[in-house]
Image 1 (cartoon, rainbow, N blue to C red):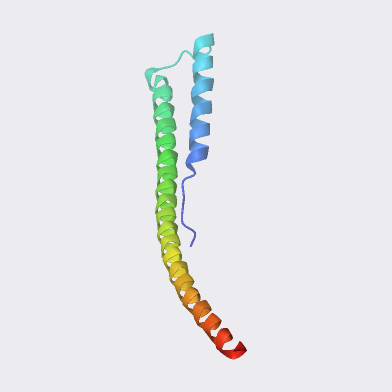
Image 2: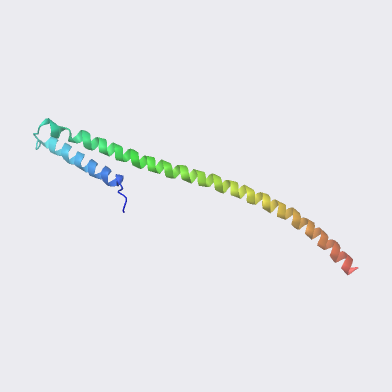
Length: 107
């Protein structure tokens, strides 16, 4: 069964378009309606604001996830730095021992 999802981007643009058309028609004098129809700009304005708020919330969640991922990567890089530093120390010891061995073999 497919889950129903609201596309807030579509709601935003449809609401904004309806609001614009209604305000234009009202300003030009094409609309002479009862009070219930006068509520159209309020309803569409509310839907537009709701859709914009929903989208902003989604972007904020994505940003929060990205920041958490970056913090995790930063911790991993610090761990890698420590490992490389330890390997560098061990390699230095091996190099010293190899020099001693080469000296003994060549003598």
